[in-house]
Every structure is written in structure tokens, then in C-alpha cells.
Image 1 (cartoon, helix red, strand yellow):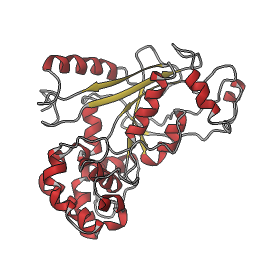
Image 2 (cartoon, rainbow, N blue to C red):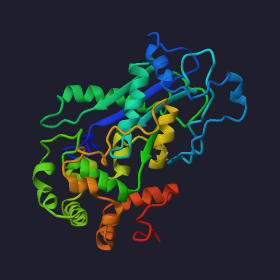
Image 3 (cartoon, helix red, strand yellow):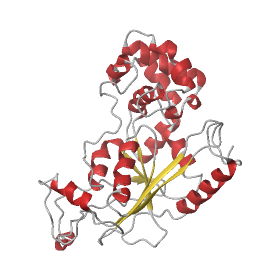
Image 4 (cartoon, helix red, strand yellow):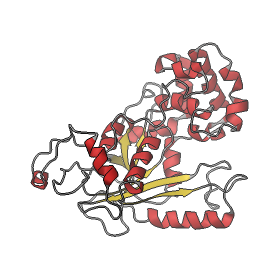
Length: 330
């Protein structure tokens, strides 16, 4: 499958969002939306450019983890009093990993280049499937995205024209699986006609309690594999696939830092474009009520075995998971 540049038949689209920020004014537009945005946040102080050399008041992001031992971070910087935006210097891009807050981050980054006028673009490569795009269009989009990915570098203060720092967000597989169930079974934003939502999951959705339902879904994925629906794909495979197997650095942030990342992008830190706890977001009320407490020991052990590769990935990065008591790497 690597030779024909696919991961599986019903593979997901490659989604890489990019935005370029600097201390200069936006590339287009008068930034009225940005000014309105600032008026909606009156408690956010303006800071003089001189403060950039001093201790910033804004909370700094923790060092991201990546597969090239990069200990740098997206540094918080001060606002410029004479510019209409609050952004630090960044030239950043993001791999959209399903069910890790990616939709909210893509929305925030898209707002920056679609509404505020900064340079940016969303690279999307749709799969060659029955409902996908023609082979010629696929090759064109993939080649363009591949050239863009070749510019990925570790975080730095100054970027050349084609350079950018690529990051991704990861999440405890035990938490992510519950969110994935809600989306895979027809949650808002998913394809309602998916085979999984209407066929494979029907038996599990007939269960009466969240615990029975959760145990059923663990068994379903254990039997049929994570390939049956894109939201069940292990995170490490998504990142590898979306970066086209290239040997490039990817900074990794934990899911808990989503509010900080959103704040860095001048978005509401509480933004949730897909909120599984919201009424009506998930197809079934049992799924809305489902929590981590609904795992029994057997289901949790099975799930950790299914996502062993993600547990190893997070363990390698130094992030603890709820699977640490069930999976060992001796």
C-alpha cells in the first residue's frame, strides 16, 4: 500500500492546515473582523513590543514532543501596540488527527487566513475511492501537499519562504475511543450514510446502558479492526499517513493543551466545534452519557491491546495513558 500511496481502501483525506503570522500587517483586507474580535475581548491587555524581551504575562506553552527530539515550543510573545493583531511570529502547520480537537484548531487557523487576511492555506488530499476524486486530481493535490511537507522544520525564530513548523495533537486512547464512537455512529459532521453507522454499530446501539454499549463497541473494533471507520484509526498511523511517510519533524502536543493552542491562535480557549457532551451532537443519548467510568476491566484491557501502537507512541514521548497498567514494553 505504501507503493501506491494509500493506507487502506477507504482511507481518510490528508488534511494539513497552514498559517503564516508575523509582526507586520495582514496581506489583504482592512482587518475589521480582527478589530471586532478584540472589542469582544476587552479584558485582554495590550502589551508593548518592548515586553517581548521581558517575562511575558501570557502563559507559555509546554515544550512539545516530537520524533526528532525537538524541545522547542510555540513561544508566547507580546502584542504590538501599533498593529491590529496579537500574534507572535509563527509559520506553523498542523496535521489533523481525528478526535483530538483538530476541528476546532482548523477552524481557528482558517479564520486567521480566511477572515483576518494572513497568509495560509488548507491542504486537503481526498482519497481515490468511488466517491473520491479522479486519479489525475489526486496526483496533483498529493504532489503539491508533498512539496509543502518537505518544508517542515523544527521550531525557529525565522523561517525561509517555504519553511514551516508542523505540529499534531494526541490524546489518551481510552478517552479518544469514546469520542470516536460518537462520531463514527453518525455524530454531527460525519457522513450519515457510512456503512459503520448504519450496519456494524446497530447491535451495540441497541444496548440499554453506556457500559454495555461501550463494551460492545470495543468488541466490535477488536473483531473487525480499526480500519472499519476512519475515526478508529490509531493516531500514530494518521500522523504517518498524513505526512506521507516523510522523515520530517512533527511537534506533538497533548490534548490537554488545546485551550492554550486556541489562545495562541486568538480563538476562544473554550471553543469546541464538536462537543460530544452537547445535546443532539451524538446520535444516541446513551452515547452522550458515556464516560470513562463505563469501562470495565476486560473492555479496558482489550482496548489497550487494540491501541498498543498508540500507547507505545505516547510512552516514547513521555505521556502517561490509562493503558499504562495494561500494556508493558519490556
